Image (cartoon, rainbow, N blue to C red):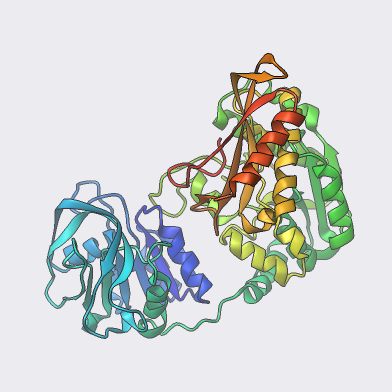
Length: 512
C-alpha cells in the first residue's frame, strides 16, 4: 500500500466524502476507509494523522460503530468530527448523552485560546451543527477549547496526545472557516505538506495503468462526457494504440450528441472512435419498464453486453475502461463504510461473472471537480472539460415512466431550447448541470382558444462543486419565462413548464 498522509475512518456521515475533497483541495492527499479497517492495513499506509468522521448512530447504542481501539495507541494525531468526537470522549472515559435540544444548522463557534487548530481563523465564526447527542463530561486530560450557544463542548483537545475533536462539521460549505480548520490539523498538527495535485495524480495513474494493462488492449467506454473523455485521454497517454475507444449510441442521447462526440474525439484527441448503433436493442429492452432502478439495471447490463460483443471483434482485449467517479461509487454501494446506498449507477459494482475482461477505473477515487482539473492537465480543451454532466442511462431517467421514441423526441426538443437559452445568456457556464425532465403528467391548457390536455416538462438547473450536494440555480425570471414560452410554443405535446427548486439533499440532482 502507498503512503497516505491522512486517513479518514468512515462512520456513515453523508458528509464524509467532503472531508477528503476539502483536504485534497489544499494539496493533502487522503483516503477514506471503513471504520472497521484493520489496524495492520492502517499501519501499512503510514499515515501522519487520522480523522474520525461523523455518523448517524449514537455511541452508546448497541449497534453503534467502533473502530479498532489500537488506533489510539499509534501515537498519531487524531481529529474526531461529531460522532468521532463522541467516540473519543467515550473511549477516554468521558460521558455522552442524548441532548435535550437537538442542534441542526448554523451556530457561532467561540474560543479564547490561540490553539494551532484555530490558527488564522476568528472566534465567532459560523459552523454547521448536525447532532442529537452531546458530550456531558470531558475525559481526563481533555480541555474545552471552543463553545457555541447550545454546545458547551463544541471543540475539545488533549494537546499532549495531539487529539482534537469538533462537535460541528468543518467539512461542509456552511462552516465558513472549515477548510482552514482541516488544513490546520493536517499542516500544523500532523506535519503534512501540500504536495498532491492533478499533475502528480496523472503521472501516478499513467504508471498504474501501464502496470495493470501490460501489453493487452483496453476497450474504453466513451460517452462524450467529461469523465469518459478524461479516461480516454489518460489511456491514450498511457498505452497509445492499445486503446480501443467505443461509443455506444443507445438511443437515449441528447439531440445531435452522436455527431458531436464523433467530431470531438477525431478533432481534439486524434483518436479513432468506434461507434456502435445499439439504439433498437436498448429501447426494446426498456419497453414497458417504469421502475427507475430497473431502468438503470437494464441499461447497465445492456451496455456490458454491447461492449463484450465489440470486444470479441478485436484480438488482445483483456480490459474494459470506465469513467466511474468516486461519487458514483459512494451513491451506489457502501464500499467505504456504513454510508447508505442512494441509487445504483450503471458503471458501478464490478462486472458480471460471465465477462472475460477486467475493469480499469482510473477516476474512481476522485471527484468531478478533480476530474476537470485532470482533463486540463492532460491538455483537453476547456469547452470539453466544462460540459455539464450527463448520466450514463441518458434520457431514460429523465422520462418518468416508460421510455418511448415519441417521448424521447419531445424531451430532446425541449432540452435543446432550454440549453440554447442558457448558452445565449451565459448561464450555462455559471451552473453545474441543466436539463429537462418529461414528467408524463398531463394537465389542461388553452392554446389558440382551444382546450389542450398535454404533458408537463420540468426544468432542473443546479449549482454544485462535486455533485455530492447541490442547490437550485437562481436563474432570472425573464430567462425562465423565455424557456417556458419557447418550449410550450415550439414543442408539440407540452403545454406546461415547471422549475425544480429543490436542493440535494434531500432531493437528488437527477429525478430517477
